[in-house]
Length: 391
Image (cartoon, rainbow, N blue to C red; front, side, top):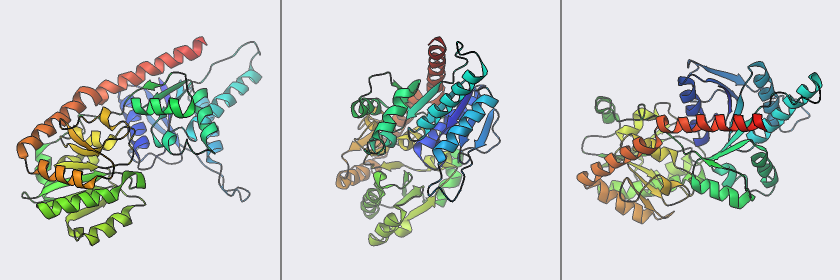
């Protein structure tokens, strides 16, 4: 199939999933066209069967805010027509779904002008994948709620990354049509612990006597990076330990301030945005993910695939991924004392830690590997295309 994919190309879960989906689909022989304002950060530009189409936005002085959504719709229509795309798959409802629907209408209008009115011509199916904050934060803003509902309702197919997000969407937007749950995934051949690589890289971040914790996010307030520092400070005062912070964002300065206040700044590696996350995660013994909301918990899944269990919060779709005290640990939002106590206890019990690490890896392999999830997307694409053509 020829598939157009639009996502936010910056550091964030929806962009990561969309990019990895495109890479996996391309590896299975599909022709993938990314349509966005810059190349997604996980693309190298050398992948076979993958094409990138930049969306240029006019800086005409009349526009205080450049109309990216309109420029995106125009570029979507151009790419779809020139390359005869079979469908558009957009990630994150605002503004991508609305832009895709507009592109579809533009193509249909051009067809009606070029062929007899009695012929409908070839349609362009639009599939929207909901990732979380497009529904739970942005979409519920009163000024965006009607257009978000419109984008979902007018899409030919809608998927959600967890049952929690599906149910939340139906409740918040009064959606009664189908929402297919297709969960996030990880390439289990890429996200895997390689002992030789770990032996070579881990000494850069921790000694053999130290435990190594990790946090991965875009450092937005919802990720509660301050809780990461609070938990780590307690762990570091109880045992030799270090922390890798992977990512960057608005709360980095808060994290740096707290690290200095707790006098653990020299035990923390602020690594910023990294392309080799799959090599860094296996170095750790434990992940911290104390988020206020996670519709799925992709960072935890990536760690779990590397044999690194997570201490996370019991929110959103996380319980669909982590079974408490089996492949990870779950606590209430903000309960840094319980998370700290649990982290110290787990890191002090090597047998229990290794048992949980193996269970985490097994969960990823059994339920969330790309080899299991990508076929679900392919089947859904075919179903939506058939339904659109027959309709």
